[in-house]
Image (tube, rainbow, N blue to C red):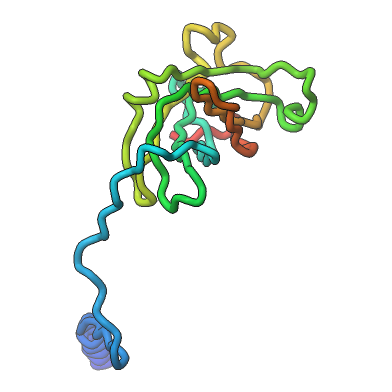
Length: 184
C-alpha cells in the first residue's frame, strides 16, 4: 500500500511538472512571431496560369457500400510562376483516369473522364493554407459512368488538365489512387 502511494505521488509530481508550460526564448534582435497570419496580396490581372498542382485523395471512398472505392476528392492549385502564390482563374478542368501505367501510351483511352466547366470551377473555388485553390469531387457512380465502380482494378492513375480559352492546356503529373481499400 505504501509503495502504491509513493507511485501515485511520483506520478502526480511528474504530471504537475510536465504541465507547467513552455517558454519561448528569443535571441538578440529576433522579433516574436506575428499573432495574425499575413494576408496574401490581391492577384495581379496580368498573370497567366503555367503550372497545375493536382492533389487527389490517396484512397477512394465507398459511397454505395459495395466494398469498392467510388468517390475521390481533390484539391487543385493553379500557379503563374514566378508569382509566389496560387491563384483562381477561369478555365476548364478535365480529370482522366487510366489503368496504372497506361497513360504513357498515347493510343490508350481513359477509363473515366470528368470535365468541369468554367462555371463549375468558379463554384469550386476555396482557400487552403497555401492560398486560393479548387476543391472538387469525382464519382465513378456519376450518370455518365453507368458501369459504376466495378473496374476490376486495385489502383488507377489520375491526371488533370486545365485549359483556358486561347491558351495551350496545362497538365499535372500523374497521381496514383487506390480503389480496392476504400476510405470511409
